[in-house]
Length: 129
Image 1 (cartoon, rainbow, N blue to C red):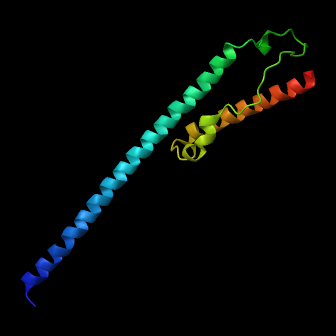
Image 2 (image 1 turned 60 degrees about the vertical axis):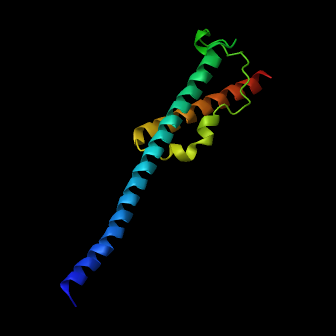
Image 3 (image 1 turned 135 degrees about the vertical axis):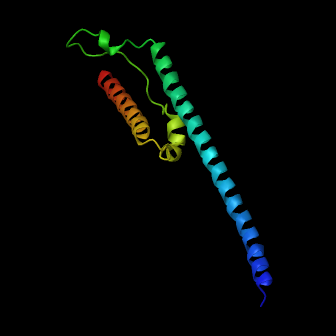
C-alpha cells in the first residue's frame, strides 16, 4: 500500500467530517440565538402583562387598602374571577429555561404572590356577600 493512497484516503475522510462539525456548530449557534431571542421576548411579555394589570388596577374604582382606618374591614368589591396571567401560563416551559436562577425565581415568586393576592380578594368578596 502506498503512502499517497493512505494520505488521500485520510484527507478524503476528514473533509466530510469537518463539514459535518462546522454545520453542527453553526446550527447550535443559531439555536442558542433563537432561544435567547425567545427568552427576551418572554421577559418583555411578562413585563407588559404585569404593567398592564397594575395600570388596570390603578385606574379602577377600587379603593386602595392602605387608605383604610386601622381596624376597619375592607368593604370594596373587586372582581377577580378571571385568570389574568395568560403570558405566564402560556410560557411556563420557557420560563423554566431562563438561565439566570435568581431572575427565574423572582418571576415565579411574583406570580405566586399575585395569585395569592387575587385569592384573598375573592375570599374577601365571599365574606362581603
